[in-house]
Image (cartoon, rainbow, N blue to C red; front, side, top):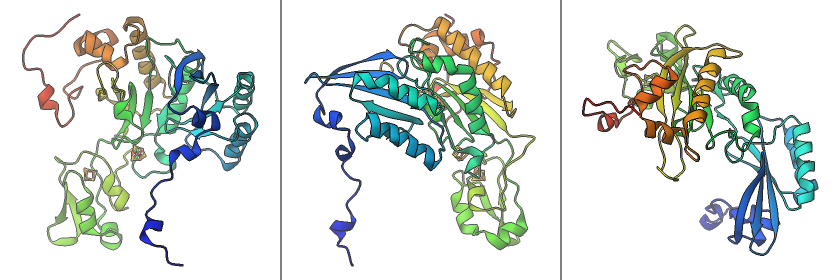
Length: 359
Ligand code: SF4
Ligand code: SF4
């Protein structure tokens, strides 16, 4: 059978087809919502209908059997509808108030905590890291687990912080997982350029594709042997993209790979608008499986933010109010030339005067 262009080019289906009946019936006519307890949001429609969102954190990978069990809960209490969010949550829209506690009980019995609403720690985003990617400099899933273990109570508490805190973990600077837009981000760092293994590049890799793959134009054909390449070390930014294309360009280096810490990013348009996270600690060694030092730094930042920020102030907004100098001072994090203004438009943000703002 040959399909016409119209039949082929249908695009994504209309999302309204997938809305739970109570959402479809009251679409655009919701009056208000309130956070009634950790992980539960009550929605009230103009019609008088109510619905309750129950939100639980789940890992990035789950077995099909787990998905089936989650769907069974949705069949039982949510008219067969379930939502998996980009922030590694599973959301149940429960139409009857009497079923809310049953949903919480069933999901938590599976090992998935209900929480991450209002002024709590939101579910932590992580990239796939070593489980499915070529380029990580660190183990994002195990850092995520260590952070969850430290901040479990704050994940479940709607009033844990002055505002929500979003954390994210990426295995490398490609930042899959919205790390640049998170309140606190852990990002894997390579610090050595890829090693070019000529024999592998010659035999298995396409040199033109390899040259084209580099976002910094750091790869050139090798003089005298055009079947392989050389890297301009000054230009390389250690992204590892060339290694994804060619096994002959490994970038991993156990001695030099580690993590960096960034703070102050957010996506929302509220108050100050979106902010990019800024680099505050350029390098810490990899310390699996418990990541004591990474967790210690994050805990310290969170506690100082909690003690000093105003109500409804996100981490980035708080830092901008008190000034970056004050932030480094009260967190006792050493400032270096690598901190804060490390991005392409940095020159526009450089301090042009000599005055420091101390609050
Ligand atoms: S952030 Fe890096 S390590 Fe993680 S999935 Fe993306 S490319 Fe891979
Ligand atoms: S690591 Fe990234 S910047 Fe460096 S050579 Fe490879 S692709 Fe280019």
